[in-house]
Length: 516
Ligand code: AHR
Image (cartoon, rainbow, N blue to C red):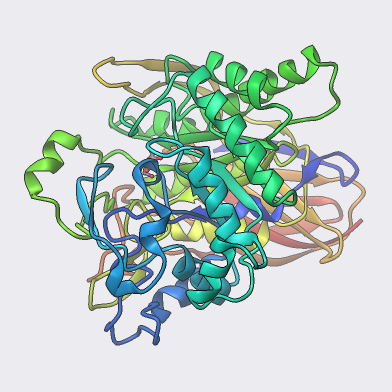
């Protein structure tokens, strides 16, 4: 039996979680939009073709903001193709996913879907094959009230009120050679600055995220952020980060440790961004938009493979089936994001439906929850408030995480992985304290002892655990409830001391009533 001790105090906080920390991402990719969110003719679709069974699960998952339309897709997207009468919209070859794009769903449908789901829209502009002119035109089409060609075009298309989209991404992963018209940092930064200027001249209330590195393993990581921010500093509020965690090596202990590299990545991007501020003697701080994160490895394939498929419409690609161990690593990533609530002000789980997603559907059939659905729902529903600086005294282990880059076999040693990964969120208004706790030991139970100093009237509200003897078990259409949270028994509270026993390899959520 292992023991971990944690000390908390309500006055020692990291920061308040921004509602946008709990976002997700929907790309024109496989069956994410078509056959996922949107499937006209499905028995559970509404008059617009939005699947209401999916929407019901989305409400339970509770994402707050949704990034759209890509991803790799946006780097070749003509937004004009996706507006106006559906019958007039062109079919196009999508070179990101080697598919055929019908354009039956576009910006206006996306906004309608977001309104119905009560989710804030986040739009990405194409800075790959298009330029600043197309980006500023999209802002005018979406956000200008009327009296100009593009705003009146939106009205003529049936949307009289401006969409008022506040959060915009200046392209996607422009550092990646797989991207349509990938760029050097300087090439991208120059384009992004000019787009940003014009977009904000049209609507000064918008917030902009510049592309950071598409991964910490990118050879240009670090210099990319510095160059981009040197150019864009005055014009953007955010820099983006992306991470996909993997267990290619079949090393579960290292896989569970891998969210700690997300912590390092965040700290490093903060350091680079703040160095740019420092050189300018500026008090402005660039915030982080972690606008793609998840576990993803089994369904990664090359373009060369996809091209053989003859340009399918909405193919079944990236349909990763998530296991119990994926849910644990995913929970660890949620903890990493919470523990950086001071600087990560937006984050998007990539993605929402079918493609590397918490929600799966069968085209024409039912929808169900993958294992990763649950930690995200816990994170979003119970993670609102002030994240506390937890002093954690935990046993540690060492791991070597394997994260190849192309043909390069790269490994990353993590010498001291705390077996307990934990975040604590205090919501003074709701008088609640929630502990998110991952026991990363594969074979030992852990006694968790939390001293919640200066909290009074602590009481147990609800305790949940996810763990299973089979770390490879998953939910499927045939068995959609194989893995789901169950009550965590035996949590005790005595004065300011909370004690729990955490099963080996388990994700735990301990919800307490707490008054400061
Ligand atoms: O989310 C899948 C893909 O991963 C996105 O399109 C791209 O931005 C990233 O490489």
